[in-house]
Image (tube, rainbow, N blue to C red; front, side):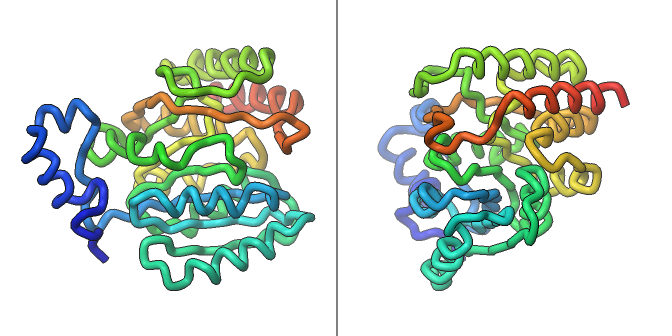
Length: 272
């Protein structure tokens, strides 16, 4: 289904903007065209996220891009699954926001939930979206731009680039993230600034190449997928993003054990 003519990023909307502002100004403002037949698959792993899930899905649905929202319940113990069923019912007639649900019978971890979601993705581009409200779905268009323009195969949204708003939280988390990124870069020969970011976008063809190799069930997914992306020689871009992190009281799940596991994964996939 084509986008409405007045939809942002539609060919008609871009042509009108160029008529008023000129093409060079439009490019400098970051305006571009998303093809009418483009589909974005948004993979959302869910584990005990009943407090934020509905608001997050609304934010994703509001992005003016045709989407497939894939929600994977990793055996939540709260009301997340019931909320997911309600979401599927609410959007069943929305042609721009198709909803696909998966459910794990046992808790397996974020990496496992992502593999389940990736296998069901049919879009041109696949993006990882956590079920909390730490990352802003409204930034999808700017993250997609290098891929739409044919410059990138993979885009990482960096919390440490640019001047976007960031909630001030844990110092040692920041130090840990930067250390893990530096260690990962040493083995992949990349110059990423934020390997641990949630926002990773892939051309689906590229993701399908590495999907059979992915094994990490928890947060080891981040260094694992980065190693495979580097090894395949995919074109990688980074874009600065905003970040509104959660405290542990608010539901943050990653801990120091995941950091140790990340170091193990960096060494494992960097040396083998």
